Length: 494
Image (tube, rainbow, N blue to C red; front, side):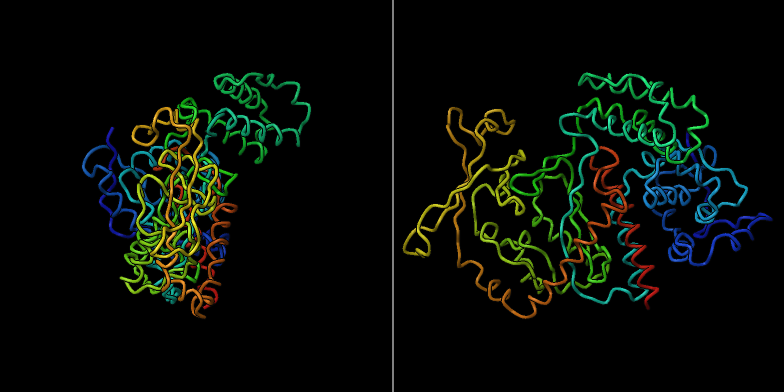
């Protein structure tokens, strides 16, 4: 069936209802959703999505702005499709935000899934929404600085690398806990928990648990229970296929320190000193932070930001970034790290330095297990430079799909060596001793606080779906939300 979106002007059609006056009585002027409606002209949604609709055939589609706003509400409140639609039945601030009349019927929750999969495909939502908020911030004269702060934050895959059944186990556990707080006697009615590591058994248990709970009409009226029940149902209904794949195929292992890792993605962020995110790049978890710097700068400039300085940690001080910054007359406020500020080295595309772990990572995502430094210090041109040698787990190398040309069969060790060239970055070393560098470095804490806000207030610590495309959509909506909230706060202070 083809869907049609009407040929609408940039403004939405006027809603005629004798009850519209209720909004002025019930939704106060300082309500966050009312303020967002006043702040943003959402007509840009029509322009961006028009190619994904048929304009001359089929029945009228649900207003794409309303569908987009539903997704925004999901990000703000971290609820399932069913619960966000259900709340829009009675929450007048939701109805106002969605441009509904008080008596208007809500959408079917399944429409949100179709909208995400069909209407948002081939739309660069991440850049679109960031650029829109930066545009608003510039119009409001909120962004005045000419510096960006860069960092990367990790998001764990929704699906555990080894035991995907734990996703369902955690959801069902939270549901049971919510029920026990109301009625502990329900414990005797629940099916027996699985005793195996078989995923299909856990799915069957979850389905039986849902059946038992749905028969208890009184219990499922409690919001806390209803929300957890809907989240479990959504996982079983929408994600069984991904769960059966045993893991998220796009997610990769990343390393936070030398002895801790995560399975998922990285969001590389650029942010103004006013704490407005100006650019983002989504990658798999093993990617190097410093390699994204040039893209972050270029995206920020395209969004309208003048970049005269970049503030980051040592991950961004590799040689290519220093050259790029100097060429473009940008001050790179990032301390040198002798392990990543090398000159030319072999196989640069195959081995990248992970500054958190202090080790190199091969293209398969395996982290070196130890390193050793060889040679005498300060030998200069008359002697050989010192060399850092990184050792990899030989057992992993034997089974690695990228072993051809990398691991020689029968070898007892696999190493990667890097020459230390201490004189390569004298200019940057001198710059980092300046007062300007020291003062600008103090701004870096702001982006760490922003990462914390994304994770703890908007569920960005764990991916809500599998795959990079799903992660980009989640990132787009989360960043759009935190940027709008920041703009509202700064406009209050003006």
